[in-house]
Structure formats: C-alpha cells, structure tokens
Image 1 (tube, rainbow, N blue to C red):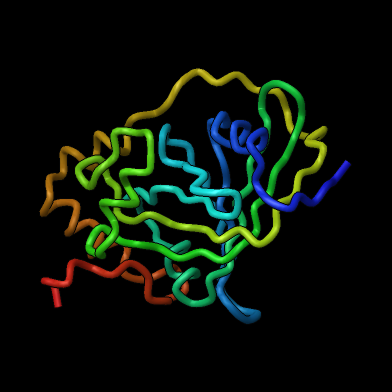
Image 2 (image 1 turned 120 degrees about the horizontal axis):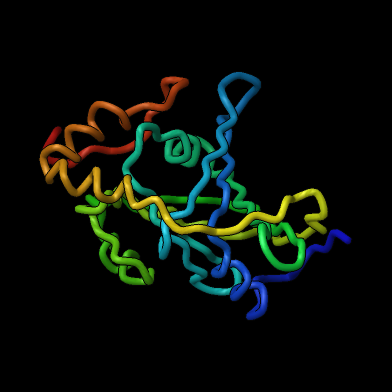
Length: 191
C-alpha cells in the first residue's frame, strides 16, 4: 500500500500536475502556535521544477501562515489526493523557502508556471520546496468527486484592487501570522 519513492518520476509528475487541488501544511516550532493547512487550487499555480523540487505560486490572501512558518523553520508538507480515477494520496515532505514579488528572481520563477499569473492577479510569492521525502498511500478513504471548474474570484478581486490596493491589503493582512510571527515582507520602499 504505502510506498516511499526516491524522487518524483515522470509518471508521478504527470499525476501531480493533473490534480485540481492540493493541501499545504506547516507549523511553528515548539509546542505552542497553530498548525496550518491551506488548500491550493488555482490552475497553473503548481510546478515540478525537477525530480526533487516543486513550487507553487502563493497568492495574496487573508493570511500568511505558510510564509511565517517557512521563515521560522522551513518545514512543509504538500498533499495531493485523487478525487477522480484510481485512488491515491501523495505527500511531498521537505524544506520550503519563498521568493516574494519584491525579491530578485521572482519574475524568473513565475515564468516557470503555465498559468496567467502576475502580481495583478494576486501573486505575492513563489514557494519553492526542496523535497526530502516522497510517499504515496492508497487513498481508499478519499471520496470520488467531480471537478466542475475553478473559482476565479481571488484573481479578479486582486485585479480590481490595483497596485496600491494590493500592497495596502498585504500590509494589513499579511505582515504577521495568527501567532504573531513575522510573515510577508512588504515592499522595500515601505521601510
């Protein structure tokens, strides 16, 4: 049933890219603080960079737990479930880092994705995961579900805000985690 893989092979790569949703889990160091699990699913926001590295576009949203936890300890797990077809669950355990829209290299990383993605549609960072462990399990307990399409609400919402509105939103909602950990760096011009 459960199996640990040496790396992300071609077959697994294709399977990962075919999934419509995945989940990101992180946690702060120590016994206190909140464990965070975030669903991700905007088309074109996930990429397999090589057999031991994956990345996803982190969209501007109401929280910044993942970035805060990565800043603190780097631990991250991505989980993919087959909601259609043969049952399967794949977990990618590793160390994460992020490149924000204000950092050198952001545009080069963003170009590695298939989607129509940019800051105007809400992209605030790219999270890169150096995968240390690849495993899959049966997925027998995961229900079959039909994919009906994407909710394109977040990118549209961010596009309507404009450059200054998006920056103000990130200043208000993304500077710290719910546990008070430093999270998203603001535009260097903000000081």
